[in-house]
Length: 114
Image 1 (tube, rainbow, N blue to C red):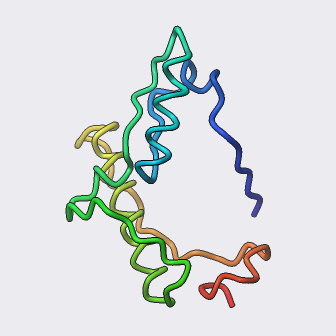
Image 2 (image 1 turned 90 degrees about the vertical axis):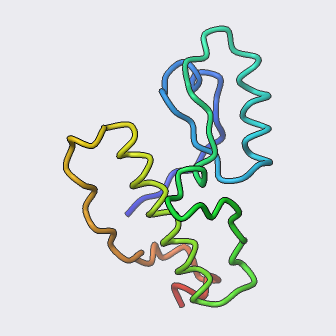
């Protein structure tokens, strides 16, 4: 498994339909950056706004336990499913059941993967 993370670029605003942020700070930063782009087509939204359980605040599980990491993972799965249902529409097949996370070999300090 390979992971690639990067900052949002100005080109992303013209390339993608949606840019989903995971907290208010990221949302403000992405909105600020989008104001510098003439041809912004991306809808910038908070991922957690799609939670069917309406849990809009996500607590950082860093100082928590395994249950806290599991809770945030399940919330992310719920939100992603709801987002995909909105984008694809109800006629599309349901999103496959989420698989539990697998260690990437780089998360040595994460209690979920120890």
